[in-house]
Image (cartoon, rainbow, N blue to C red; front, side):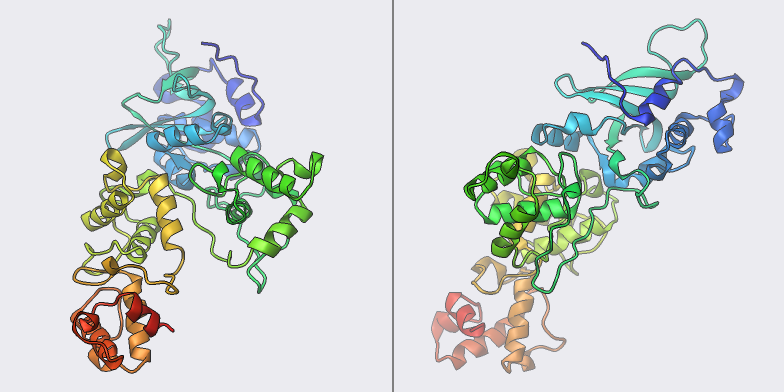
Length: 442
């Protein structure tokens, strides 16, 4: 296959210029001397050196440790599953990984790192430039050096990649990661047009998410296979172009790139209530045995809101456990999914669906369903009901106040409310139905 690559990024120009450089005795290299850790494995030092020499040091960490690079770029990390998913969904994914980093592991040890020149998804192989490696063919010298390698996605030691947004070079925060730009909402919940610089193929920010959510509200959701997100793709452009054409616009006014008129038309009609922006899927690596992070808590909270929290004994928390997996699995099965799609480990589709269903707060305007109430139920609809019962004068049944886990206090308070409406029998058993819910929240 042809791997001739037009090297367009300064990072790759610098790296390619080093191909053929060999190490001296005991890992002696200019990269190790530069970073202050000579005579050590130097693949990570080579990455930092290339970043600095190409003027991109703000997008990378300066470290001789592969694990430090991985931690620094944790929000931009794609494991094998997410790579396959993203390449299928995003037609520009192959381009977006150019200049990114590739990682390898041996057991629990982050063993090696390189720079991505190109990714061929058809053959699932990366062309890379790596330090402290060999070219894959016999050498006269046994010394390692800088060489071009071809790495397969299926390799047993392949760990993942980090995608780098080079458009942010010079302005990126030193914390690393691709953090979506926040939205300056006004009091009405909408926002003024932020500028065309936020909308181009590959752009990554929350304005893209807001655009997509408004387009879905406007009836152009068929262009999205999963749903709106912070990365501007051809789906966003196609949906936006369809909306623009529906306004009678043509030519450059209907090219799928929003301008002030498009933005004003969308926000004036569909912008209300968009102050909540759905977070994008962080990656499968955050949901595994031993993981402890904010995303586990976010997942748990949404599962509780959606009515799938019965396996929690004390509520959602940051440490991934079997309760998280079981609750997530029940949610996945409720969507009709089976097999690996319902194994209890969230992927992009689970995350998207969960936040679409649960939203940011429970919607109490309509009765959510009987499965949210009863033994084992643990969700925010139980909290909402309890708070409303207390507000209406039935607080004597609660010893510590309303909470998300269904208890006998909830049943007794609800039953007292039902009896006060003159209801009897199964209509006053303490379990809310549509009539109870409507009367309680009217």
